[in-house]
Image (cartoon, rainbow, N blue to C red):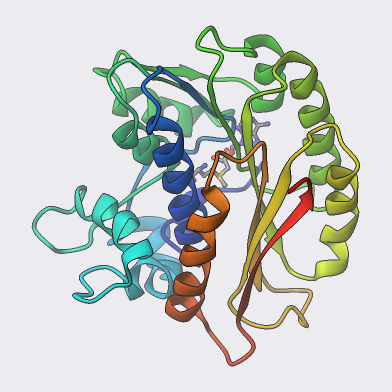
Amino acid sequence: MNYRHAFHAGNFADVFKHAILLALLDALTAKDKPLCCFDTHAGRGRYALGDGEAAKTGEWRDGIGRLFGSPDLPAPLRRYVDAITAFNPDGTLRIYPGSPLLAAQALRPDDRLVLCETQPDEATALRALFRDDRRVHVHVRDGYAALNALLPPPEKRGLVLIDPPFEAQEGEFTAIETALTQAHTRWPNGVYAVWYPIKAHRVIAPFHRHMASGPFDKVMAAELLVRPDDSPLRLNGCGMLIANPPWKLDAMLARLLPALCVALAQSAGASESLRWLRGE
Ligand SMILES: C[S@@+](CC[C@H](N)C(=O)[O-])C[C@H]1O[C@@H](n2cnc3c(N)ncnc32)[C@H](O)[C@@H]1O
């Protein structure tokens, strides 16, 4: 395993993923009842942009770097940028929060957050970050296997975020399909969000076809291409597949995605889309 998320922290894919994560958690926390959020591939939770891996690639400059501090952001992006600003209160962008930290910020005192991470260094950093937060449980274990062991949560409400490094390339989709099928038998009503990279669309099509044929009744896919996907060697965009999306999430994403596309486009062929693969 060579993947280290620090190289990519705050890039366009993180912006897309985390803006949607917050939209999901906002929709779920609108109801009074406690919930549980699982992050199966959590990373270290917090990234310094000014040094180390993030500074080396500078990927964040075409991601959060384009939005942070901007005075007139469209409303759908404001919620996300405000969340990042809370970790950089002096107005200088130094820290990029990963999905665990953003989720912890969005959750309420009675909600729980379950984090899985296999790389020991990343898991150690994650544990240290949440040492004093009793809502958060860190597991140093395979995130897919953890779903089998931990679903359904006692709260019976909540979200599973699946955000793998895709080192296994197309094989990762097979692992995700298996995990979702098993998770559905244990917790059919959970909300599931799966991030995936887009280099070329033909690689994604079998995954979409699989999810369109079950087991979940409602499945949507949100996608952003920062350039046309005609160069299969580059990360041209990314998507989020959402099974059992909360009520009105589609309307929220229909406002968010065009704003993300305008803000993050890297060439004239940038585009976004929101599609129901099954249901609605
Ligand atoms: C894309 S990064 C996660 C980023 C994080 N979700 C965020 O948005 O801030 C993927 C992480 O998954 C970890 N990982 C890889 N395989 C795993 C597995 N089978 N189970 C749990 N974690 C895994 C990697 O070490 C890496 O830190």
